[in-house]
Length: 187
Ligand SMILES: C[S@@+](CC[C@H](N)C(=O)[O-])C[C@H]1O[C@@H](n2cnc3c(N)ncnc32)[C@H](O)[C@@H]1O
Image 1 (cartoon, rainbow, N blue to C red):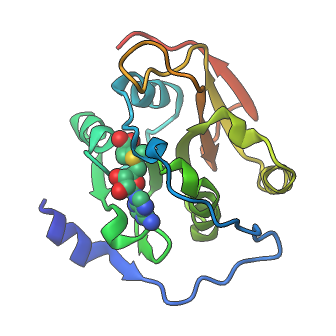
Image 2 (image 1 turned 180 degrees about the vertical axis):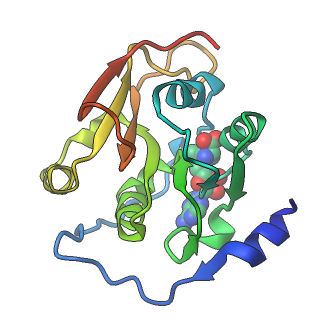
Image 3 (image 1 turned 90 degrees about the vertical axis):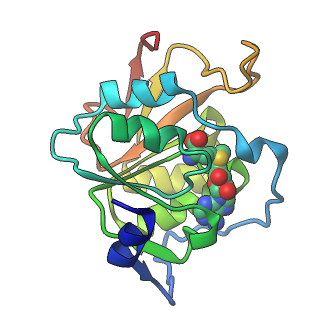
């Protein structure tokens, strides 16, 4: 299925993005060089191994980049709907069973806010420090976010010295606990 066919079939641009009472007060965060770190296969494999995806057919990768996540998922047999900044996640909605992405980290609050607004199950790979901040604490409590925490850092640099830890922040994914500590299998 071509990208154009997928987009004309599923794309539904939203003009109005009204928030709810828990809308985050977003700060103006500048893009950084860490915004374009592409997901390693062991990180996406870790997610797929630990989520129950039996009822998931169509997945939206809304910040596709070089397609690391989408290619992996397509190889596993999922239909993956792929968009990137040209389609702007803040203004786009695509009919799907679930959103899986690794967004630019300077935009993590905007991506989280938008994903909650859309109401679909999602899994986002984010720095583990995303657990911090009074505002996110309130939102995560209210929304019952679930976090899938690996027992090692994913190596984004390829140099085995990644200086930050990440985890999958999941919503409506039916994980057993709010904090799920799991081992990463080699991939
Ligand atoms: C960290 S890269 C991750 C790429 C891919 N998800 C992966 O895991 O390998 C972040 C991607 O988000 C895209 N992006 C930036 N702003 C965006 C926006 N407003 N809407 C959708 N994608 C955006 C960038 O172009 C980049 O490809």
